[in-house]
Image 1 (spheres, rainbow, N blue to C red):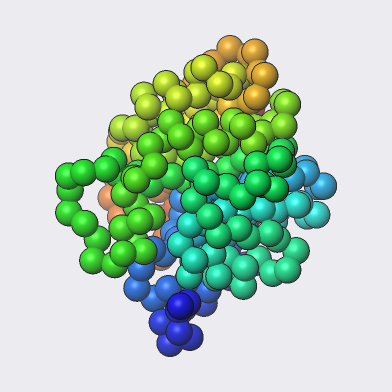
Image 2 (image 1 turned 90 degrees about the horizontal axis):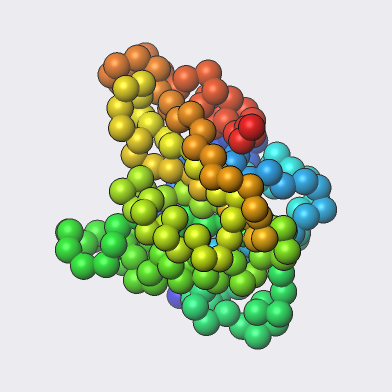
Length: 250
């Protein structure tokens, strides 16, 4: 059973350039999938696989910036996969499956880019979310290493993995990437100047041999505290989140 219309909201992203149906109560996309999409250096005509696509916001934002992409999404929660199909339209392929048990035809395919926003919270401990869909999106059941392993298998030679993750999980991410991918580049994401990074964007290449690169952090908000007069995003963050600007990696 999918969501009833009364259980949905239709929300704008990228300053209204795109919109997506989301559950009113449950996992709701915010800035993370938008930042993930901005970090993907795709070009028209390339293929992109999103693991754990939810309702498809990252792929939707990426397609708004880069035309003519061949989009595939994998989502294990059928009601969220149904919304991803609705949001992305018939040009995208949405597969309802667990990433550890992909259908045979998808296991034979390869992609120029694999993108992912895995759950931030490790299994066990903590307080469970009241909504099962939100809990499944936020708390890990499949280890991070398996996410990276599946992504690496699905990448074409010289293809790129782009992932967003909580900063405290970075050692696990790097440990999973190291034996499988190379040319690792990391950009921390900090809420404000002088604050520790709360999240990280990580890129890695199949067959890459370039040295590790640690880029300056992307600062999301200006000032030392939240402003009550509209949003307080920094100019670069506003360009990404409102104007569909890419996040440069060089």
